[in-house]
Image 1 (cartoon, rainbow, N blue to C red):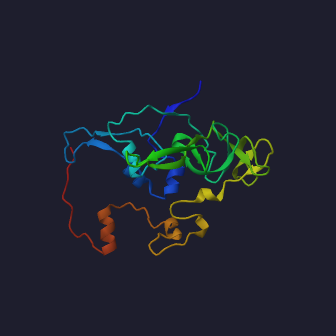
Image 2: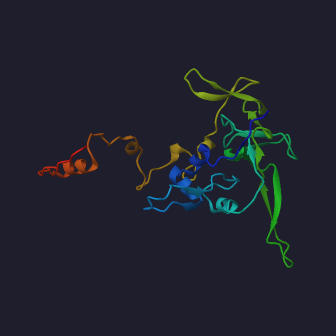
Image 3: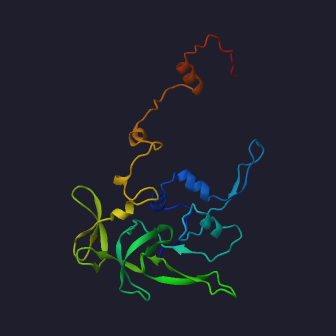
Amino acid sequence: MRLTRTLLSKVHDLTAKYANFPDSYVKRSMEQVYWKTPRGKPNYLPRTVERKRFRFTTNRPWTGQFRQQNLPGVVRKKVFVEPIEDWSFFKGDRVEVLVGKDKGKQGIVTQIIPERNWVIVEGLNCHYRIVGKDKDFPGITIKSEAPLLCDKDVCLVDPSDLQATKFAWRYTEEGDKVRVSTRTGRIIPIPKANEETVDYKTKGTYIEREKDTKADVVTEVTFEPKLKTFEMDIMDEMGIKEEGEPRRTYWY
């Protein structure tokens, strides 16, 4: 019996990394809160009515198109996704298509949607749609790649001989986790294109700007834990000394 689950509202880690946005921003841009307990109402139970399950598509979760496709009241067929413990396909991988009119052809993965187990291969599994058609205009035909399931529709290609192969995750002597072809035993490296985000092509070529937070500042720990309240800490910083005597309190 195959394990299935409904789509979770959590964005996959690889999707968030591509955005280069804080997790708080991605969560805030996705959330749809319909009702929340008003502040300052102690007699109310803390309740929040919000959308918890989203239908993920090829649009990024923080875009307006994603929100439009998840508007309240829009009823769509439920989608079930088989969970993948270790995501094994990355942007820049060469894969071979196993189904459809492009069966047997190879291409490069240009986009991944882990929330649906999808990969999009450049120039393969294309479909056409007509937009702007009316009685006086024939419309414009747009060609775009349709997504493919990574666990059924595509197979990874071994870079040593450019043949489709099954693979497994292994550890090197240095402790690095790598993909290994089960047919040839060669390592299938993760492409450099996987590092590409909306801000840079690769981390090594990114130039820090004036308003960027420096890397050494991020790793520097400036907080020192103390057994003091916030007020006591401020008083020490400003050199304020408490000269009054606290009022007596009684506990019965």
